Length: 136
Image (cartoon, rainbow, N blue to C red; front, side, top):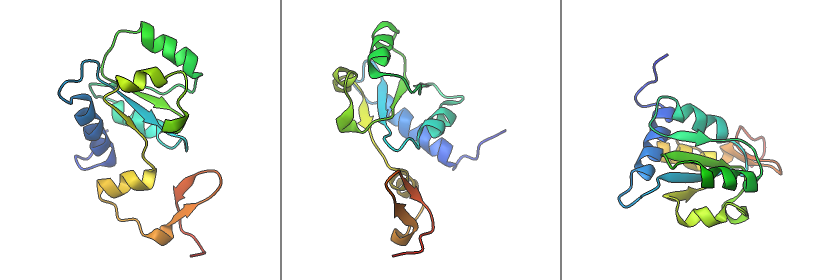
């Protein structure tokens, strides 16, 4: 299956590639914070056929930290299902990362060029999602 050159997958891959190939980045890795847990599958899809890998296991940060410490550095995205300010054991590596990103899906879609109207964004106690709301 081929992917359209203007697809969200290609755009996301380009965003990640640009971050990982910044000048002066010795160990190119990106930490992707995802407290709503909406990015995991999208990141895995973006990594298919790309020059970077995605670590997206929902594991304890201490285990992830040990794995990262002992694994040779290659371009990679490390998915964390926590907010940026909630990173704990892995926090020491945030200073070395090319970036620590936390995007909501509506923010990313807006950057991609999809116009999202305010009355289409619904916030609930569990996650932020794009949906048709029956209330203002």
